[in-house]
Length: 407
Image 1 (tube, rainbow, N blue to C red):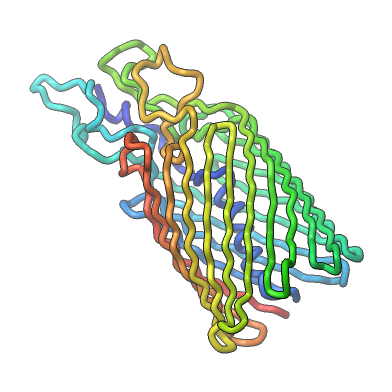
Image 2: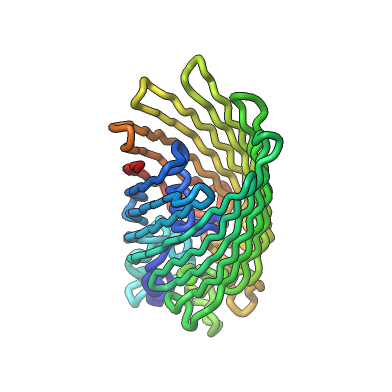
């Protein structure tokens, strides 16, 4: 048979990391928090980040901006925008060609070109994304109310979202309670294996507390619940069947994955921040537990250090470890399309895996009203199931630079 028909698919022009949160949303959140963590005045910020996987895989360049003003003592307005430029290649879902045993040889007994490759097949991609959000915080005594709207678009995906957060300070501001709700109404547009537009909706609820345990110690704890429904497949990922729908035992082919149309997730998060005055530093440790109805259990541990050097420099090294079990329907390939299970996916991001992230960032005060931020991270993902090819898992370098100013 023709090897390209078995291993390749329509050009992949989108790549979204796993974990239930889009890359755009994660970038928006991180940009907002980073720009606001040291000041409460009117501020503007810009950030550039380059995420680059090895082996000619995904390369994402992100530019993001933030603007915040407080025209009244009881009102704060925030706006942010993100632009992504994406290129490179991503695994199709097929195992390495060398692991497929039923190739058809030509008249001379030769295998198709590339059939001996020990690396997972990749499909090229390119895309652009725009996303933004607007939020307003209304304060009344110890109460704060924050409605938010967001919108994001790329050539194969359209996202619309809204959220509302309420927080209240108690016990002379030693305790802050937070409750939040968000809803996303998205559209997955035809491309790849998807031929008709499909809806995707998600709701999330979070309840949390920030507790001052002492003059220099802060505890943060929250729990959240989320539900996603609709088209939850990755429209560019397939599963290799050794026998095609036509029942030809000598015609392996890549067919669209099939995930459940409903997914619940449950998350618990705990962090502790301790100021270390003699060292002019602080340390923060956190733990996050994740469980969903895909039967994925995930654990994230992070440790960070913030070291102030003199009056103008803050250095922040950190380490993060992540481990997850595989989804109940994860497979590397299937024998026969006609006897396939109800759900199946060969997306390596649903396999049993672990990731390591090691990095350092620096904030430099050039003026009282102007700071420069730089950072570097090394990201490594490894498979743990003993079946998925190690070539499916990426390694990446992440470099960022940004600036913040107050006025």
